[in-house]
Each structure stands twice: as structure tokens, then as C-alpha cells.
Length: 157
View 1 (cartoon, rainbow, N blue to C red):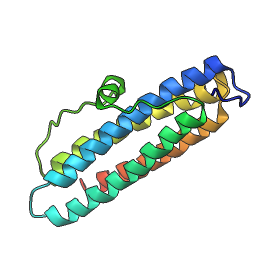
View 2: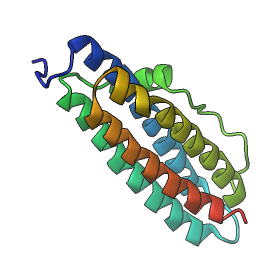
View 3: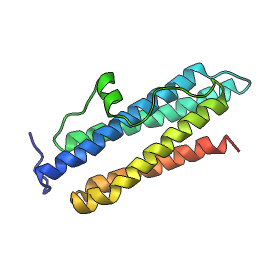
View 4: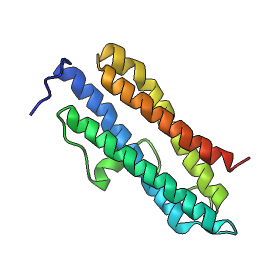
């Protein structure tokens, strides 16, 4: 059933197009963070193992809220690996080593990429597509990713 929430259906469809790309990015980043948690090696193994676990748990929560936002707008979410890989702008490829520095650099780049994508869509969703709720929602996601990026960045200094 379509949502009757005072936003033109055409605009809702455009907002959902952005949100499902965000969901795909979140899923790929979640998976990469899980990979870091599972495969970390080195003298700081235990601390980074726990650190990456905390990060993927936060990403799991974010994914759920993005999917729920899509549903609140009357659409279904993509939910296959194939869909996510077609929609994401992140790379699954790991370019760094299985040590904390390698994983952190890789994950930090992905968080920053998501932040930029979200920031690029905040104003257009609010102003052009008339969806202040989703604009506010993705502003919150920017804040979540900025904090996670800060935590990653702090390990590199």
C-alpha cells in the first residue's frame, strides 16, 4: 500500500532510490567490518577484534533503520547480495593488509564516502523532493558515520 504522507509519489520514489543505495552501502560496509573483525591479525588483535565488533553492531542498527525508513515510505527494500552489489558505490575489494592499520584505512574511506553521498542528498531531499523527514533522517546518519569515522581515524594517529 502506498504511503499517503503529503509527498508526491514521484518524489517518494526518488527518495527511496537514494535510500536503497544507502542501504546497499551500509550492507557492504557492514560486511567489510565483519571481515575485519573475523580476520584481524597482529599484536593488537584482541582490542581491534572487539573494536570492529562494536562498529559492525552499530552498522547493523543503521541498516535496520534505513530499511524501516524505506518501508515507512511504502516501498520494499532490496535484500539480496546481488541487489546490494549492483546498488552500492563502495568496493568489496580489500586493498590493504589484514592488520589493524590496513582494515582501518579501508573502512575509514568507506565511511567518508557514505558521508559525502548522504551530505550530497540532504538538501535536495528536503527542498526539491519535499521530504523533510528523510532529510532529517539522513542528517542523523551523517552524524553516526562521522562519529564512527572519527573512531577509526583516531587509531591512525
